[in-house]
Image 1 (tube, rainbow, N blue to C red):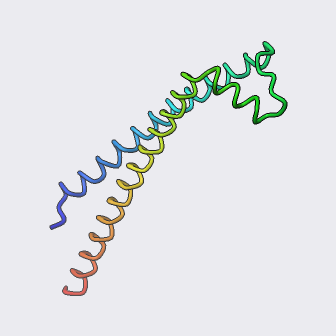
Image 2 (image 1 turned 60 degrees about the vertical axis):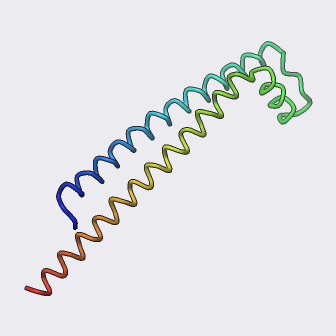
Length: 110
């Protein structure tokens, strides 16, 4: 049965998922910025001498492996939290649709 507690629970879950998605998204952005700034520093110092962009990117990933790994992990965490947020959003939509059906059934019966 659809109750106020059920509705409150799904909205609370969405609120928590949204907060977590924001936090992990920000962490991913910070990790990406750290990698990009370090890559730029290497480029300016002449330590990335690849013939093209792909070669320089490969050199940067190798030279900055810990930062690159951190960035990849942060991106993955952000994607997971975004998925959790979307699933929570779908739960809210389901409960809203169920509530609307109950309202329509009551109106038709009344």
